[in-house]
Figure 1 (cartoon, rainbow, N blue to C red):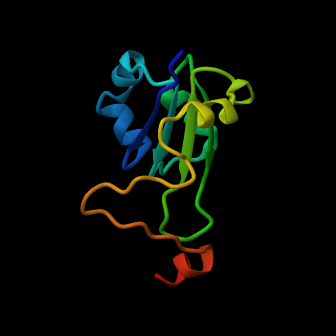
Figure 2 (tube, rainbow, N blue to C red):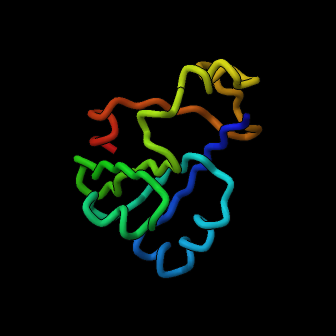
Length: 114
């Protein structure tokens, strides 16, 4: 059994929905999708993503930040994250860097200063 996670920077979920994201969501094989730069309140997320997905989101507490969301085809409680991590060929605790990338880790207070 495979478990697929996709990550998408939607640059505003309402704009992405107007541009056809619903068609992509209907055709993707992803089991879970992480969404960045959502720019929509949590009460609108389910309507924008559409049926067949369980979705949770969090608006940013920092002014000027856009918020994130997670959409799953099944109840989030039913996803066995430990089993997924054990089945991954690459450790999820030590990600393999992509050529030319760099890893940055900041605390919320450091983020607020930027």
